[in-house]
Length: 113
Image (cartoon, rainbow, N blue to C red; front, side):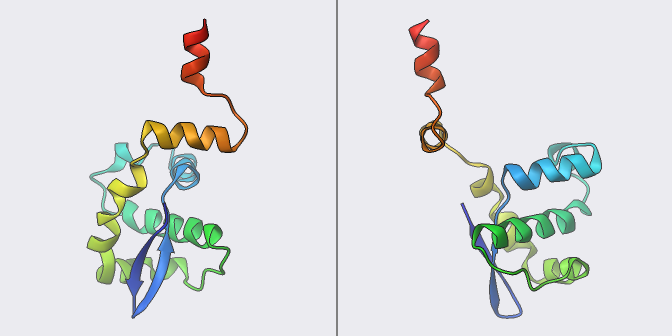
């Protein structure tokens, strides 16, 4: 689910999904959960969320990675407030996404056996 944060009066799409979280873990060698008490990760996460938001909306990302600290000064609470939405996926949503890409319902497959 794409959310929006405001920076200098302009709304930017942000999305923290599998792509962003996997990329973070590959770059750093540990998960976001393992680094949750390290405030430096927020700049990296914001950058990745902005990248994924731009990809999702098929827009060019106008910001630079060096701006993330300043951006967080203005919208950190707004960004962090979206975390539960980014990580919340119900079982029904998960199964629906599997069907959209042509997969089978894994629960029904297990029940058949």
